[in-house]
Amino acid sequence: MAEPVAGPGEVIVRALFSGLCGTDLHIVDGSHPRATFPLAIGHEFVGLPESGPLAGQTVLVDPLLPCGSCTACDIGASNTCARLRLIGIDRDGALAGRVAVAEDRLHILPAGIPADVAPLAEPIAVAVHVVRRVPPLLGRSVVVIGGGPVGLLVAHVARRAGGQVMVSEKSVSRRAVAEALGFELLDPVDPVEDVQRRTAGRLASVVFDAAAAIPVAGMLTQLVRPTGTIAIVGTYGTPAAIDLQAVVFKELTMVGHRTYLPADIDAAITILDADQEALRPLMSGTVTPDQVQTTIEALRSGQGMKYVADCRT
Image 1 (tube, rainbow, N blue to C red):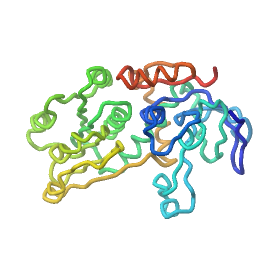
Image 2 (image 1 turned 60 degrees about the vertical axis):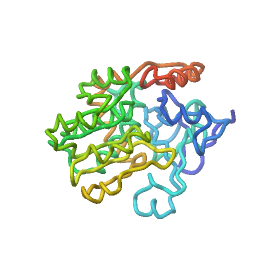
Image 3 (image 1 turned 180 degrees about the vertical axis):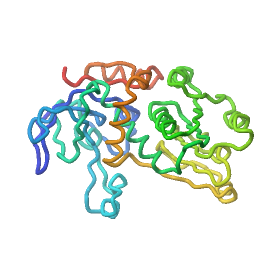
């Protein structure tokens, strides 16, 4: 693999630890729409800049590569850039060992966050961004569909914002992690009826869809009360049917979501610094680079939640 070369405004970052996520599963199985091999994966990572004012400091890397010139970039929504690319997806990521990164994409980490836990700040930023896109949650009933790492982090951030959070998840192992995190779990067979019962028929004020599964799309409008909000967190690979008549008759708001902005990363680091022990049940372990392939297969079969690759070895 060729050594990275720093371009204008970039520095070389030596990767320390990188989280493995659902996107990596899609890259490895060839179903990601952009990523192609040969490629070193790893977009949730921390490292040490080798030069510049942050040299030697542990930083979290913002892997987004917006074009800087499209409409989205012009209006401050660079996370929705028309030509958005990511380190670890469109070009080599943390498992390459050393990566060229723009200096303005580096976020200093507090000394209290261990480097092997710090990659969790990237998916927390996803949760921060989507929670910021819905109405204030204080005192409101909230349903999160999908108890994977992102779904449970959305639930965590929503609870921090004052929401009364219920999690819908069928997997026994994921339900166990959600329970360890202290979340109220919905009936896996009929979550709609369970939400009706728990809210005395009022339903949820906000529903976060972190599952992006066709059957889930069909029940979204049944879970939310009139004038409520549906936030789509997961990415649907194919079009899904949603009851638009219910959206009209109940005057619902539907909110899309894509990655995060730099301010969301800063907020996520603050949350992780405060809550790292509470979030420990999400962490499944640390693996070496030569164990990444088998770890991804384990994740694909439902074993574990959040693994971190040690890029130093």
